[in-house]
Amino acid sequence: MDGTLNHTRTRSVKERILSVAQDLFAEQGFAATSVRAIAEGVGVTVPALYYHFGSKRGIMLALVQDHCSRRQAQVLAALEGTGSCADRLREALAAYSRLMAAESPTATVVHRDPSLFADVELRGIVFAAERVLADRLGAIIAQGTAAGEFRPLEPGQVSLLLLAAARAAHFSRPQWGSAYEPDELAATLNELVLGGLLRRPRTSRE
Image 1: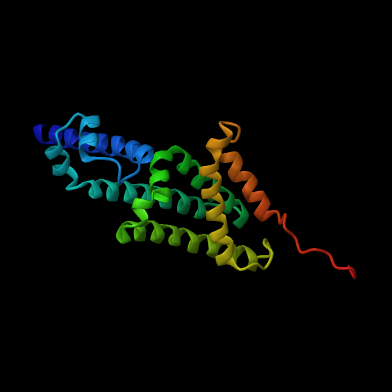
Image 2: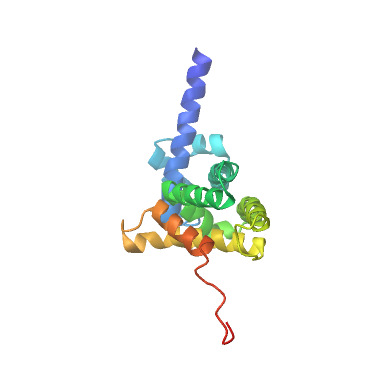
């Protein structure tokens, strides 16, 4: 019983450290956030924080890995669902948008903090996770093209543009308050892409 209780307490402390750190990193940036500020926010000593994560970078590493793992799992689950290729793309993009909104502080750190992108290992985790998603999206797009669902566009380019647009939409949402929900933005983005809004212009002979 005591072992289980200690494990629960340890997990709780680690979760609180990650929660406080992600908020401070999002508000102040990674470089400007001190270990002492994190420890004080959690209510533990600095040595206790080092015991759980080793360093401030260790905290950032845990945040990035957890966030990327959850996003990848949810998007891939949507892509492996039932329905047409278009249906699965719609649900995958909605899952991506929902997670980015639900984990907004971490998403901000992962994708926008210059301190993160100065770290080759941390940057590599983010890029590798996005590459997995882009490759899987590209495979679904290629499958849909072969089945006659989609126009013959280059799958790799389309997948990268979808992810880039989804990220941009998330980070633009605060400018408009609560006017647009993540699912609404994802649905509109999907219709713009999958519905072929940008069609080949007609020529004088057509």
